[in-house]
Image (tube, rainbow over all chains, first blue to last red; front, side):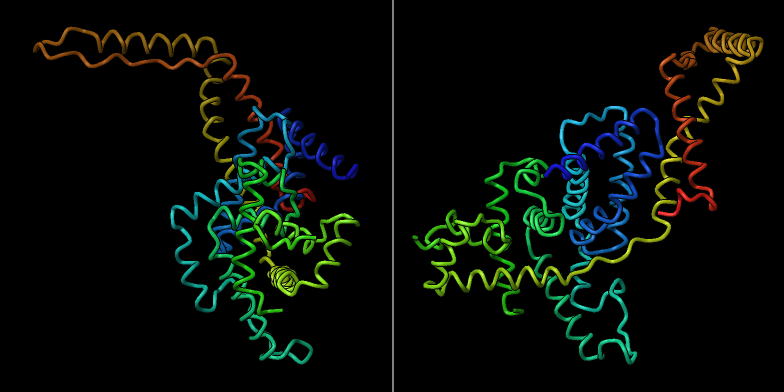
Amino acid sequence: MGGATAALDYDAELMLRVKDGDASSFARLLEKHRLPVVHFLYRMVQQQAVAEELAQEVFLRVYRSRDTYEATAKFTTWLFRIATHLALNSLRDGRNERSQERLDERSDDMPALQVEDRRPSVEQSMVRQAALDEVRRAVASLPAKQRAAVLMHKYKEMEYTQIARVLNCSESAVKSLLFRAYETLRARLAHMA
Amino acid sequence: MKCPLENRQSSEILLEYSFRALNGSETEQLEAHLGQCQACRDFVDGQRAVWEALDGWEAEPVSEDFDRRLFQRIESEVFWWQRMWGHASLLLGYPALSVAAVAALLLMAVWLERPSPHGAPAPAPVQARMLQPDQVVEGLDEMEILDQFNHMMKPDSSATKM
């Protein structure tokens, strides 16, 4: 807990340095949070190109907001609030209709099948790919807010309180979102056990 | 222990148990119940299957030029201000030039305000945009940060290897 709190203060400290004009601190924040943000957005919108475009916008907004930044919450709470907001807007705008169609066929974003001696067999790769497609479809079937809650809970290991702050709702609302989301996912994925 | 599946609120404890988020005594109590309740065992098994399935969903690698593109976007946002500042600094750095510029603007304003020979309405006067001191300071800050970004964008700089 102490280490996590120190990490929290460090990110906010870096952002305050950015506010003071230290561009290298912005680069350090980018280095630390680039992958988590892109991966979160990728799982939200399920298109790598769109995810990277949105992630660029996230960091651009972080940079633009440097003059008015105040460390009133965890830096990651603020960061993922921006990311979630952009992802929800993107989904609402229907920019990801193509991604939904492409889930029914092989996507160019997916890695090519390997046919080498030491790699899994083609059959194993196809089975794995089919399972992956099923997971992606199941997550894509969730309403946007449930999807965001699950992704933050599962992949970012955020506590209910932090997810609530990101989604600007109550902790009980987050629990409800997660309960319903996992209920849907169990219905679709429990057979994969 | 009452069956958690009796209502949604109590069934949240099954999720917590699946996530290994319960304390020792809660875990012990629930596990005693799981030994007697097939429905709850199915719930937990299903949730763990979901967890494992989600674990297998690896994200794609980020493009190698992600940072470069981001810094370019930041630079382009700063650039327009730099151009404005460039024009303003030229006037501020050369008093004679600024006097000449102001005189030219005044002459243009007088010429535009002259009565129209055919009675047509005169066009609106040209509005000269003067920079305020805080805008000048902000421009200097932007230029300083831009210099730092330019340095980081150099190919041989270790800071750009993200």
